[in-house]
Image 1 (cartoon, rainbow, N blue to C red):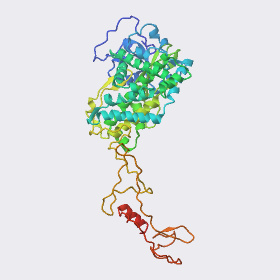
Image 2: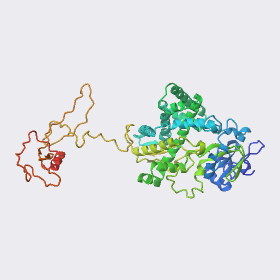
Image 3: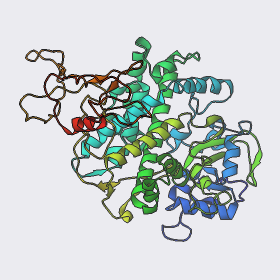
Length: 547
């Protein structure tokens, strides 16, 4: 079998593979690698790159053949050439020939659906236009407030314990809470919804039931917004001129919810792990050499939330990366291997701050339309968490961290941390690592001085108390102001009054009670009334006035 035609043998008999541990483990018909059996996909991709170049043949589950696109330029060409490659799996040769069974593990990712992610031409423009139009109505200032409030709520759950799992207690909850706000179903957000979404994406035995629960929530939301429009994504999606049906609305709500949740949860986990395990990375962040948004972009290069995307399909015979691609062949969009292509990143240790040329959000007609939401959740969420817990540190050796890997992605299972216990904060306050100080007294320079309390010793000023809200036993009343006399002023002929002890600019000081040269002598003005208190501020004012 040649690299040009990764078709399996036609015998139909199951291959007798070698046992794990032998040099041929993980190889299928023709010596092609089974991606699902690889212990180290990153290493396998590099082996395939060295052997075949930027496009390599491989095998999916059940030895279904597929091309893996490993080169950065080749990936961009594939996703940006709708005349040659598309997302419509109905033209996939193995599917048409019955090689891909209905219960194939990747069928949920590959099966064609009438949604924007799988359609082409005018239908794609109609559906994607509705999604993009609804997303364009999001107010990102309000979005960041939602992110900070949800971060505050989540941190308040564990801040007093001094320990937490930042995957299970933070990264997997924050995106769902924010996405529920965006979609307009904040009241439906709860731990059950988070667990259902997480379970549906894992492909477990209960995944179908979990998926049904999510769809029931979205069905209720669609019906509610048809009857009661509001200012949210769902309402704008329903009211878009594309006139989506209820089924189309539900399917695109599911698409946005799952994509935004899974992508951002992985991104948050990856960024936090690097912050906690790489001293140099955290030092750059703390020292100002790197901002949180730049740290997020660096993570999107090094550990993209999705390793590959299933799948693109050749619409005609063509060539890509030196390989002959036949009509109907399937190709994996290789995000992770494309991001480390040595032709664009010869030195993987070099920082990529400010560079958004990674493949994490795809490209071309099917580029992720909600990528700015994911960035905002990661930026504001990580920043708010570090503000609340500046001393957060890893609670276990880095070697004990584990991942759950698949062809599509690599998930961090747990991220246990420790920190000094702290009290909860008001979710409406800006996240802070210090207790929120009490509000300052409502007085400023130039305003009337606050009312003095009766009873202090002469010359002492008491701190004004905060005004209290009126109540039945404390009726509202107008605050009283002290009636202190103003300082005596001396008349100036033909000009404005000059305060006692002061002179006009350019003149020397005038001694109080003494006439200036050429002025008539005036009798001293007697000041009646109580003596002013001699606090520090009053002493300063008297000094400033020359008294």
